[in-house]
Image 1 (tube, helix red, strand yellow):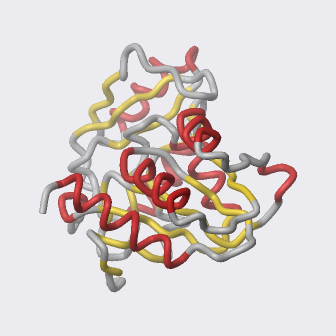
Image 2 (tube, one colour):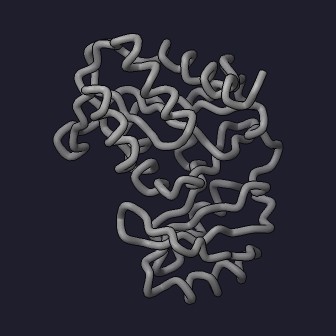
Length: 216
């Protein structure tokens, strides 16, 4: 099965977790694009979607799906998104598409986080994929120095500006044995908006190429 077919399979399987007549949280990325297309094709009767990025917002609107403001929605049931890595405890690295802050906010507001991946994203220890960190622009050099102290090798993702007007540092060379601790430590660095570890709030369900993975 091709990588694209695996993404389509995961996206189709995620539809089973979408409740009718409710607000749905929608993430960002290539697998999410397949999910949005499948959601529209199936004509799933949702009240509307809370989107994590401008690109997903545009795709939802193209399909005639109403995009809602999270401030007006409050807490909702299900958030569906992809990931760049997932460990056996369903901790994730996200942010390859630079939408990590809005993704983390929407995940926090949801009761259930459904994550779609393919086999290539499964790892025993997080960190093979460089960890994205969203940073206030004026703090980029300061944050980079602090990330070196934490054991990483930060690289500025040049030419990329997030939907929030910030920059991304991709942290290489970290084996993240304790994702909850590392997530908290990086978030405490002044100038960091947030980082791409979803450990304090991991996925509730990970669908890998169409099947649900067990935790642990």
